[in-house]
Figure (tube, helix red, strand yellow):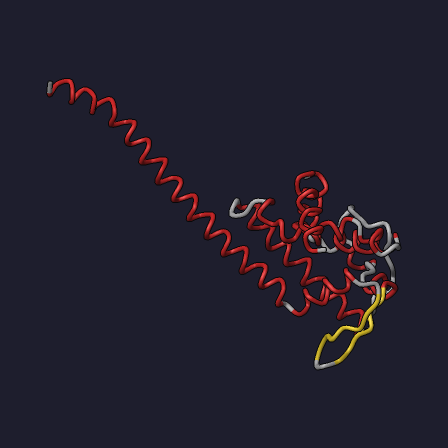
Length: 206
């Protein structure tokens, strides 16, 4: 009788170990997901609280409006200023991957410099996120909160009913080597599920 029990236990031991392993793996996975969720919440909070990023978001969303940009000063922004501020100067082109619109005018007004600083901060935020995604710490699907901005950057010319604005953004992102943002936009364009998720999220917001 003892031999039979011992044989049964011998057979069941690996199964029990496998079950224990799966339970442990599930708990580990839940723990990792929780840590990732907390991290993403902190990144979203950082995105929303950054004054320059907030300014860039408003410039993308609006065709024309007044924005507070420093020391209580107000900056009037319209689409024409965006095109002027985001122009690519000839001296900044170093590679063969040249944008199709460059300018020899190398000086910028204080207001234009403010616009450029805001978008540099905005674009750089996504470059930093891309470094985390590339390392495997995040997946593209973790970034669903930012799909709205990927969608807007893909079709900003259509959104603002001015194709020159689309060229201005595309040229700027290429010329100043915001690789991470470019990769995210490319992934978004190819990921039909991401676009569906964006549409659902946008419908819920509306």
